[in-house]
Every structure is written in structure tokens, then in C-alpha cells.
Length: 547
Ligand code: AHR
Image 1 (tube, rainbow, N blue to C red):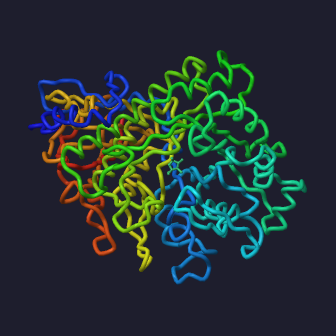
Image 2 (spheres, protein in one colour; image 1 turned 180 degrees about the vertical axis):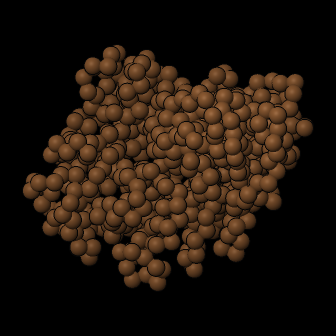
Image 3 (cartoon, rainbow, N blue to C red; image 1 turned 135 degrees about the vertical axis):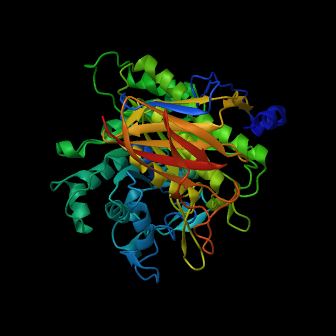
């Protein structure tokens, strides 16, 4: 097989140097492949299960941004679109099928402008506000705390509520958690009851501000770290209910700002032993987006060259490097990995679709986005010892969405990214298995990074194993051997996601242009299985395991 990326990439390195960081992979922190004389292989020891892949790595994010909350999730009771208390039934049904483990809300940047008391009580009496970050439009607060927690319950997911540090008070944040989670007749629990909800909700995750280095207050790392300690202190576990304990997530770094992570770890204190004092926050976030150009011109979602295809996939692979390196910083202060790393914003960020509001971040979603997602998941599985949660940005109609809705007809389309989440759902809470990629060719060098043309990961639940394979080659199919060791394989089935072109995508007219199909080209092989992967494709193989 020829690997065109290698030659394409050589030109790219200099052509794109103005938009790169100059950061080079070491090979130990990202996807890798080893050379082999034989056929391409992915070697998996089925009898050596490792770290549990936290289901929260498949988390989601819904912000008051563009058509995500309004139109995407919430259409109001009077809408012709079938709904339950204003929440779209078709969106709920599609997301329930993904088993989404958590949903982050209300932002993003919006969170540090949001005052939760404006979003409770009778809708017609709720004050309005300006959503200054996203389109400078007026927000009527008709979707607030009760509507969000209703959505969480309809989805069968868990709440990740993001508090306001940038323009909110400590008391406001403290009262929000009391309102949400307290059972007795405390002032905020009583207020919740007046507004129609008797039982407290469970809120396992609470964010202490968002992007404090930017839209969340333009703070310096040490200044925010002090505030994070203070605010976290008042996000109390309420009423001694052990089932309602909150994991507080401090607003973390962007990209490779390792100094920010270090400042937060210093603020926690050194956690040398297992008996160290409880830290004021239990996790630290990280944000990283994938784009093929600079911020001012991030690239088109659907109109891209092969060079931009490889550049994008290389940048997707960079996320794993960032996770590994932030984790290394954390290791210095927390060798037992008690503090979680939470990548609570990730995904592609393209130029908005022509003719749409630039502040609404509406973009199409192609086979390329599917590969970006699968590369991320492979990296997440390899770093599941530190990375405890990740949230794709965002669930509906914004950035790398699962679902796009038509503004005129309201029709719903599932994106290629949706299908990657569905195909990978079996990794949630499974035990990671090492998947060693052996390829006859050297990896391509793209954007200063070694980029093998196969990405892979695997996990097991005991009786079954799930293997994820991506063929990054935009033009060439690839036959590879799944070299399965340690256990017998008693059955298998495989699915493939691809499109006629790498830019194929779904529309209301062609909703299944990119949809998973059964993969028939799986053959028995003396080492395990032999599989044909089409070009630009994502494949999952489910294995039934014997002894
Ligand atoms: O996801 C869109 C925005 O990206 C979020 O509001 C912000 O946190 C980030 O900059």
C-alpha cells in the first residue's frame, strides 16, 4: 500500500509553519506504530485488561449558544414539533440511544454571565439578559434550572452544572448547589419546592467557572487558583446525603498552557500519600479544539483538500499529547492520580456554514469529523488513568454536533460524529486493552507530528471485547490482521462508517449518506481475523470471547 500522506505532509510542514506551535511529538505521548516486515497488524492481548475507561469520557456539552438549547433541545410546549414539556422528543430519543453519561450546561463562556435565579419561577416573569458572547442576542431565560434538570432526567444522564465565577458571587454559587441538591426545608430547598420540585436533584459534577484565563474573567493563573479554592469551598455537599456528593471541577488550561495546570495543582497542595487532606476541588479541566487553519480562518467544514484532511487528523492526534503532558504536570503533585483531568471541551471548530449567524457556530459534519472523533477516543482510552471525563462541544447544532436540526422544517439529522459515539458506546466502563499498531511503512510526518495511517484502541467487559479501528488514509483501502492473543474468540461482528468521499455528510434529503453498515470483509486468519478497511473509514469489531 502507498501512503500519500508522507509526501503531502512534507510540503505541509513548511507551508503551515505560520499556524503551528512548533511543538513536536516525542512518539510516547500520541498515537504510535511500530515497524513490521509482515502485514499490517493490530496486536491485542485479550487476557490483560487494564484501566477502566470511565463512561464520562463520552460526555456532552450544551450551551446557550446559537440553536443548541433553543430550537435544538427546547422548542416550548406550543411547538408543532412533538415535545415533552417543551423538550424535543426526537432529540431525546436519539441521544438516549447513545447512553450519554453526562451533560454540561449552561456554558462555556455563557456560564460566567449566567445568574441562575433569573432562570427559575414562572417563565413570563423571568428577567431577560444579553447573551453577549454568542450573537449579542436577548436571552429570555425560558430554559433554566428546572428545564435543564428535566432534560437530564429525560435523557437518563447525569448533570454537570457549570457555575459563574467571572461575574457571579460566592453566595450565588453556594445557593445554587443548595437549591439543586438539598432535601430538607432550607431556604433554597423551600424555594425549589415553591417552583414545583419537591425532591432534590443529583448533581455529581459542578464547574467552578469556565476559561477563567479568557471569557471567564481574563484572570492570571494564580489569581484564579485562589478563587477556585474559595468558590469550591462553598459548593458544599448538602445534608449529608452520600449519594449526592459533588465533584468540583476547576476551570483549567487551554491547549498547551501547562503553567495554568501547575498553578491549580499548587493551589490544591501536594497530595503525596493516600491520607492527605481533602482538596477544595477534585478535578481540573482542559479545553482543546481541532481546526485546520488559524482562529481567523479555521477552514471549511465540507470543502477541504487532502492536505487539510491530514492536517486536521494530525491536529486531532495532538489532543492526546496535550492530555499526556498535562497529566505529567499533575503527576508531580498527585502521583496517585486522585485529581481527575476533565477535557470538557473538545472537537472540531470550522468556519460557520455560509449564510448563518457567525455568533451561532453552526457547522456541517463530515466523515472527517468522524475520524477526528475516533482518533480522540483512541487517545482517551490510552489515558483513562488520569482522564476521567470529556465533553464534546457541542451536542446539537453547534460545533462538532451529534444532531443538526433544519431551521425551517425542524427535521433532524444524525451526523457522522453521532455514529462514532454510537459505535464506541461499548467502551464505556469497560477495561482498556493495549492495541499495538504494527505497520510496514513509517508513519507520515504531518504538522511536526508522526501520524500512523491506522488508529486503534480496544476494551473488554470480560465476555466480550470491542476493537475500534480507523483508516486515516484518504484514498487507499487497507487490509490488516487483528492479532488476537490470550483468549479464544468464539464469534465476531463488525460495522463500518464511511462515505463516498471524505467530505460526505448527512442532510435532511440524504440522512444516511454516512451511516454505519455491517462490514462483511472480515475473514478468519491464523493469528485472529483479517479485515479490509475502506479508505477514510471507522470500523468497530465486537468479539465474543471464550477461554
Ligand atoms: O464551545 C464554544 C466556546 O468555546 C465555549 O463557550 C468556550 O468555553 C470556548 O471558548
